Length: 175
Image 1 (spheres, helix red, strand yellow):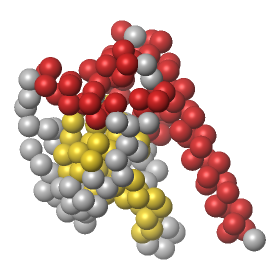
Image 2 (cartoon, helix red, strand yellow; image 1 turned 60 degrees about the vertical axis):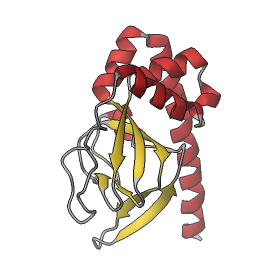
Image 3 (tube, rainbow, N blue to C red; image 1 turned 180 degrees about the vertical axis):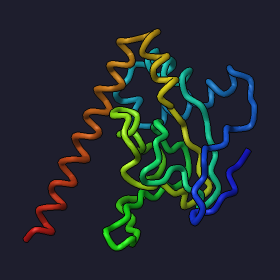
Image 4 (cartoon, helix red, strand yellow; image 1 turned 90 degrees about the vertical axis):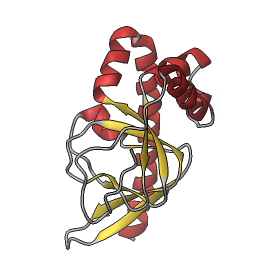
């Protein structure tokens, strides 16, 4: 099912991809993962295991993937399309913080800390996403703790890089 909700109306959940044989979906996810920066950080068998715990989601143009304050916990990797990450300011204005394209990861903060979403994610074009939700990550962690630890290290590095970038931008605004 393709999401048809527009950005001005938040959605409760993301619709799953059309049913596919588990092997076909796993192969599709693995192929997408192999074309992302995750392939630089994980060995082939680790990518395969990660792919087995993910699912494919599709979002139409202008669909909210999640909204600032939501309490769903999943990360997404852009397999195709463009996603805008939007923050609300104190005057209820909305600002695009970053636009993400193929291979970029977003939403990982809520997966790691269990807190509410710190921003809104909106599909700016028809998009295909790879989703790793909290329950699937917990299953992966139980079955393959070393792979889960490696994924967490990659996410920690990603968050660290984003914090450094944000700190640099903040300094520019303080001057």
